Image (cartoon, rainbow, N blue to C red; front, side):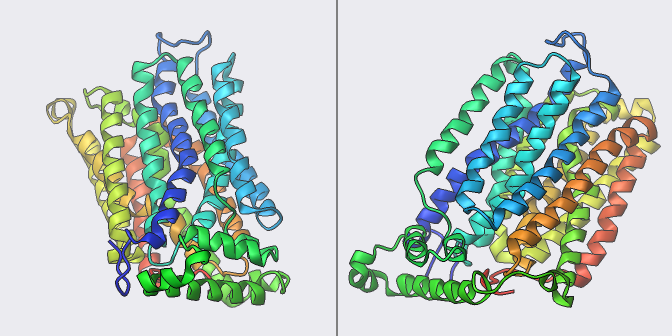
Amino acid sequence: MVRKQGLTIFSKRYRMQILVTLAVHIMTLSHGIGLGWLSPTLLILQSPQSPLEFKVAVEDVSWIGSIFGLGSLSSNILFGLLAARIARKTNMYLLAIPHMLFWILNYFAQSVGYFYASRFFAGLTSGGLYVIGPVFISEISAKEIRGALTSLAMMFYSCGILIGFILPSYLDYHLIPCIVIFLSIIYFAVLSLFPDTPGSLLQRGQLEEAEKAFNFYNNIDRKNTIRELCVNELQTSTAISDFEELKASKLKGGKATSITLQDFFNKSALKKFAIAFVLCLQNQFSSSFAFVNYMSHIFAESGSTLNPQDCTIFVGVVQILCTLLASILVEKFGRKTLMLASTAGMALGMFGFGAFVQFTDDATKAEYNWVPLVAVAFVTATASFGVISLTFTIIVEILPAKIRAQAQSIAMMFCSIMVFITLKLYPYFLFNLGISITMYSCASSCVITGIYSLIFLPETKGKSMAND
């Protein structure tokens, strides 16, 4: 619960912000299903029980995984250009198109090339979600609950991943795309019911529409302003004050003042870019995303006799619970504390996992076959309440207000390059160098980036989105 002068997250002011956030995350959920679906499906496609007429080799797996990063990079550039030129809501509509193409290509797959193309489109959706999604939600949210609402993205993402883990075990390969694609249709319909963000409207000089949108998202009925002030004077006056601050900021630094290269290369901006880039490195080289793509393979290679798909589903449940925990704790303990705890926990878990695999014989691995499951669950749990759930929330909050959309796109472009590198190298590390070296490398990355965050990462809890 978030409190500020008597306001709580259950206050009338925040209801529409919560409902719209939930609606936006229909696409996050659907995208997560696509990501989670890949891991067990690749194992199935490599087995004699493959539902397709062609087989997928190990080299194909690395390209199917990594080409996602190229799609994400392309999307970062695309949405970075579109962010300042068209409405936030229009950008949100565009996210559904490549996602639908992802499932269509998977359904009609006749060769590995179809999977290359589908994963590229999945990357397009992902890049757009991370560029536009956090900005959209942050611009409709009051600062008192912004951290909780933006971190909710990872809860829906985690729920989608879990569903994706489960579906291949119970449904026919060709039935899954037919079911999931309907989520995009629902997303289109729901998105049409609410307005663009106040910040986006102000940026384009639509003051009257911006005020109406602000009233919509803050549940203010201007026809009954006096009654509202009498019933809840604090709620309405706080909202009005926030809108005036937002309007003043946009009129001063948004539409009226053009964006120049100096805005990107001044000392303050470069320092914030450095922090954002380190957070992206931490997010990818810690293997938080690689775990999702190759989790079934990790269990298969660990020496554990437990069923890899059952283990994958269990870890998916753990990820959901801990991501939900992050939404609850983020406004209580702050971003920096959770990020440092998350990074330290991941390093500890991966060092332990690597040591178990390296220093035990086959008999010990068979006797303690639950250890890899516990280790991966622990790493996933600690990653979920920090590195996974808060990285992109913090990046949005620390970037300069004037160039936030463009800077967010640049940061995500860098992150997408790291996604490609990580997903391309991870199978090589896993299958050629072994789990121990893979875990030690990722844990070392956590230690290095964690030390940097301890020294340089600012706390952004309660920070106004209208100011740097």
